[in-house]
Length: 359
Image (cartoon, rainbow, N blue to C red; front, side, top):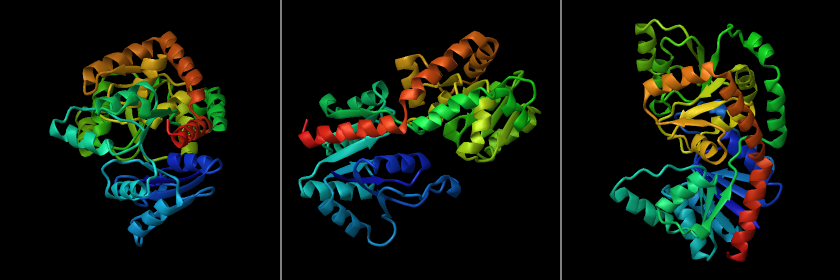
């Protein structure tokens, strides 16, 4: 089977997975762009080793799509509304070939008439690939997608080998703390873009008066966050620039608690990463990864988003409760072993076989 996958940009996790998938099936990736404006350029990965790839914003994208529709057996689209995905959908359906709506997360928010437009767009697809089990199935069900057409997969950001290495790294916690210069205080870690929806203004407010150090990795804080830190003379919150996976590993290994105070994350792979290092995770009901792992496995804690006081209360309680942190961390590390690229490939190949059979 030759598969065409239309996606937005070559994120490192997606490319790593595509390189694994390319060893099992013939894969053509058509990326809408080389990079998005709100991401550091060095974050992206252009190492396409086992699959073919092209960029639709370079040259004649429509011609590439028509050629893909002629040559490929199956279409995967990662955005139901993007113009390139719509063109690909029409081209494959014109040739009577199946099209799959792929979602690596989803949060159903009532939007009135917009819901009807989303429902109509989703209805055009033949099959649906859903990350996780409970959360994203709820997302598709909200838009009246037939349950028998939803195929699930484990959304991963590491290979089995990398997951094993993370477990070993956790044993070096004290070495990692010395290496990165963390004082003898509880350490809270967060990783993410410095944009409003990530909720770092809430985490900064929650850290006020807390006897712990918070390290937030992902760039320069927003101006209002900087102003708050200065006005309240806080010196226990530290913002560090973007880091690659290897650089991040010492911080994950050194931390006592991982916090993602997001207002909206359709998945949140940093949750997977933190769990791989055996970290207890605290996030919000707007982070689909955290909700999935909390509901299905009791491997994370979730609180309502947007509440700095509640966030502060739960952070302080967890920092005092070593037993609960240990319980969460051990469960997280155990559960995440099944969320590898290898398992994700198996899930995709199983989905392809189901689609080929027609049900």
